[in-house]
Length: 266
Image 1 (cartoon, rainbow, N blue to C red):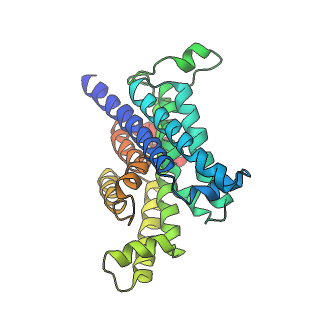
Image 2 (cartoon, rainbow, N blue to C red; image 1 turned 90 degrees about the vertical axis):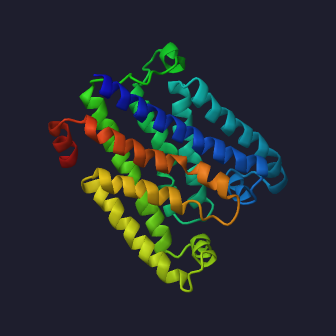
Image 3 (cartoon, rainbow, N blue to C red; image 1 turned 45 degrees about the vertical axis):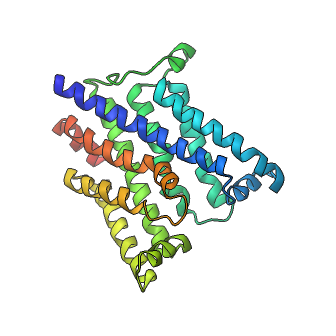
């Protein structure tokens, strides 16, 4: 039981810190006033000048939500992060970017969603929605663990296949990364990486294997360091991607053989 408690805490804190990283990193870009955000504000009919004024406000709110999750996590905050994370991801294809952008950011909304599943929904009681969630709320609940594991598998599948798709579509930003790393043929590298990530995504969806997940965790953490601008903030914002992979690595040993077979066949 002590070992189970220890693992449960690791899963909880992994998803909790990963979700907070997403929104603290995202909020930092609002304070910096990242120009591309103007395209996303335009989706809602917000003009250039108003967009620049709103960026720091949105950024501060994101950071406060992230800090709130670290200090006093509640189901209400998690639900907001799921909804807001999905909305901000959807702004990308709605503003003309590749549809894979919203898929690749599955960790942004998938990590808080999994933590919400593990913590149990609050139902109709407002008190439950705003009460502090416990790291061991899902102890011995095999059904909840199975649902959370399925959610994590789908999230990791989406974030990997989305990034692989962006590589195969020769996204300009990714080609720039490979060029800055010294590759003479960035398009070829993008295709190789794309095929690798799509195969990795399929392997996670079909049957996740812990050593493979650990390798993917290291891969994802390493490759997200290659952004040419604001590397630290980009790396922090992608916390949901690393967190989802690591949480899946932690959660697999907790499932019974029967539960694992049930998940695989669904």
